[in-house]
Image (tube, rainbow, N blue to C red; front, side, top):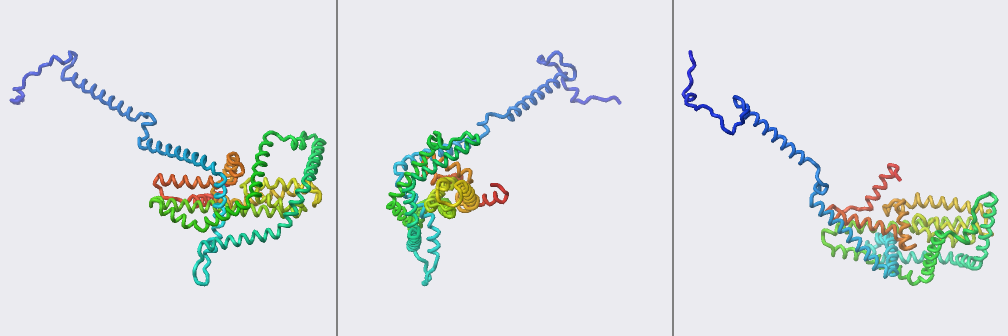
Length: 446
């Protein structure tokens, strides 16, 4: 049957081409289909370029949020203000340097004696009560003065005799030293070694002379202060006694005056300071006394007349961390070289002293120092050595004595301030340093 069109298809008007249609458009609307594909491809290209521009790396500052830039600016400004404040404080404190030194020595002595006071205070009497802190501190000071009086009674005659020998025979010792150096120059010349020890002694190099003059100047200044400082020593002991009696009261009053948010940080900071300064002072004193006693006994065994003076000098020199024992060995070697009436040949005495002082220094630095001082400071020996030289350049022997504990104190303070700024809980730097040292030792790291 023939197919008939529907009425709807019969009523449709014939399609007419618009004047806007391009002349090359073919039949069945192929020109319109081509235009749609071009638009689609252009859209894809545009979207692709937008994605590439979005993924392209911009300036470094655009990748960091503005809040982080503001935080960094605040931290840097705070650090600069702290450095400026410290500089101004140091500048002001130099105007009262002597008074500050006396109070610092009193505070260090109090830190050294605090464990003894707590030990005496921990004992319960017959009534079941503990003695007061004031009575415990007075008991400790009475015991120390009794020990000093006993030591002075036993050693005063020997010390006075050796001082007299040194006063009467110092010219002879100097002449003997020059004679020994001349003999050494002859031996060096016979072996074609171009070294003139006598010339170096008479005309030392400029750098050696400057170091020697600085050390001699500071040493003479300290000896002058020690000879005139009997009253000041009493004042230092009195300040230490006041610190020991009223330390708890001052600590509790300070903590109550702080805002509640700061009290936990202040408590941890105070504990760290007590451990660091107290451990440093007690360890350094113990180390100095042990090394001094060993040096004095060694000189006595070699028959040196000035063995007690040498031992006392070694004690004072060993208070300087790391390099102190080497400084203390200098007068011992000189005395062994020029003493006319002693055991062994002078060269053999010097060799024995050098070897024994090396062993003593190794015992002190490798066994006693890490246990007594290094654990308290939480600083590596290389860093301590750098700090000592920096302290010597800044403030002479006084800077050497106080450089290491002040550095450790600054580390503790900055750590707690940083954790407070970041909103982190307080942490004991002393405990962290001790645990880190144990871990390094377990892994064989120096």
